[in-house]
Image (cartoon, rainbow, N blue to C red; front, side, top):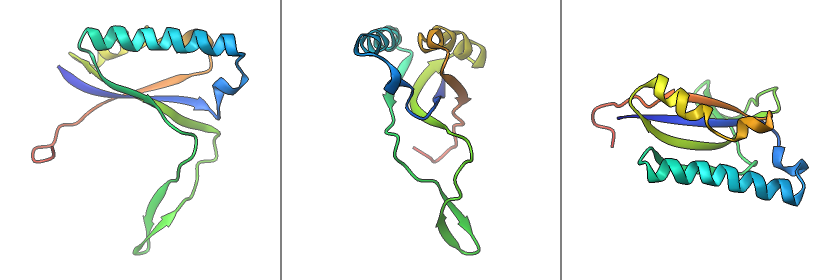
Length: 118
């Protein structure tokens, strides 16, 4: 099995506009999806990310804080997934109930295994 990182992208705080009932439904649906994949041995980990954060870069011999993206889209969570290949990772991801809400995008990236790291 290969490892994949899935970066859940959204604009700002998409759950902030949900009613308490809608939020509970979201948590139950996504939680069920994660639980099923974990039980199948396909999900290594999954967590939401806090909205606060920084982007560091290196320029002219020093580390700087910024520049920041012009877009309002952020990475709001991640999945660490196991699949036989990218196509299977895509098929698994298509089952994420977030897509029903129409406000999420998920970037799927294979983990490159480098000898001597971990």
